[in-house]
Length: 79
Image (cartoon, rainbow, N blue to C red; front, side):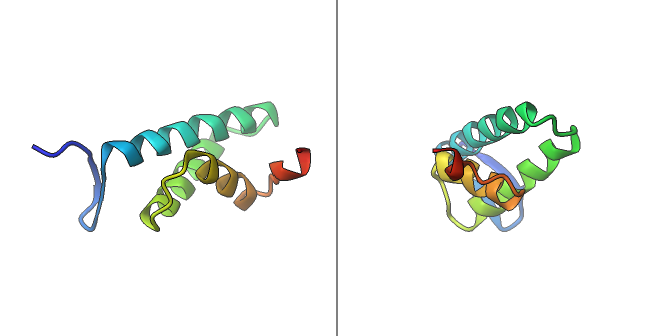
């Protein structure tokens, strides 16, 4: 039996992608918590990460960075 989570009829994420998405979500939420963002931001973060993963992005750092950038938080300026 294959392991993974179906999110829609046309998308299936395997365990490695799910791990990357969870890692990216946790990292992005920690960053947003520090900025005092409301709880609705978690839902927006999750949707953006899902969208990126559907496009084939499986790098947790890139998923996090791209999500934060889409929300107007460019962490690359902090480096």
